[in-house]
Image (cartoon, rainbow, N blue to C red):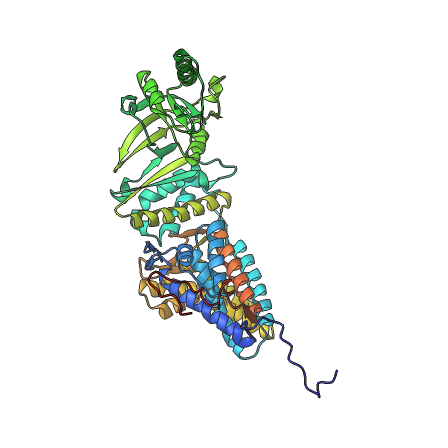
Length: 551
């Protein structure tokens, strides 16, 4: 077929599809990521500010946790969502460094931008970045110190790491109090799996932050209760605890149930049988010798009064989460029937009490022999404050957990970034070609962390960075920003410690995200599908009072 020497136009994509490509597209994606980075920059470090976010349903959140802010920021740009993902991954994997990883990724892209504008292929930049991050991680592993063999013992290492993690949080002023709580919480877990989900956190509005409690066992809010509950004892020492998945209340007949009886006595026999079933269950429970009965299902008014008369405490409708943690703490197992309950099925603890905390009542199980779990009861003046305390503690707990698994630490406060930056600069001078420029750009990007720490604290970042470069060139590898002296100092000697894993993970994630953005040079955006009736006229209906059409 002859088209008269003209190439026919072939339409592959649906009409209305937006396709943009080329170098301009990469730069556009980089600009979107830099916009996200600019939002998070002011929150970095001990003197970083908090951000107040109001969601679409008017819920307010005050936070300086990178992952939390990005999660609430409803980012729609497809490339910028990558930064949200790496921040979440850092939060899930390590727990801290969520702001650092986003700022690093944004800075690596910012450094790559001039190269792209000058026409250097994005693949050459990616190759240089991969080489640089491999060298950086190798250097971190070489610099990291194993402090587990020191005489001070394990606990002090963990406390120092927790204190560093809290330095940029709302609870920093109460760090002495919360550091002990965090370390106690992690050390109460099973050392083999260190499952942080077994640390229960309950939020109770009111009171001061320092009124928060650490329970070496389980605490849960008083469950719904019936009449007779107040007559039950609320304090036991060394009680026997029975955990059930059994309903202990009289069931009403279903609406469609039909019972045919010939004599009145027969009806009475049916009613008596219903009562006898539940009374048999209650007697079997009493014979186990348990002082505390917990059940996932309701415990009715009859059972509540029955237990009250026999000085037994009961709680029904206990959530699955709380019940699982009770079992882990007190021992025993959940029973789905009341028959054949043996002594080994019961748990115990040193002390049980019901206690008023703020406006709520809580059931506390303390001194549990099997304790592989614990509970933190957090207090605070406002719900937003307690929510931020919880997020801060989560970060510190994750850092303590990682430090327990991985004993290698490095100095924080921008010290490790400056040392790696110096190392990469020196290395770049030993190679030729474009890679020299790109590795040097990677080294420059790392300086964003100490620079931003200075800017957020109100220091002269140019002067402090120059002092840091000088100190590191003289071999002072642990020198970073010292916020107390408003100068530079040896952060390792000041115990500003962070697990090496945090830095390694942040560098890996930031470089992967940057390389991903650099490798995308085309974006195809499909037009949103219209509804089934889009574009159709609405059906003509005759409303009330409208005249009939003329014939």
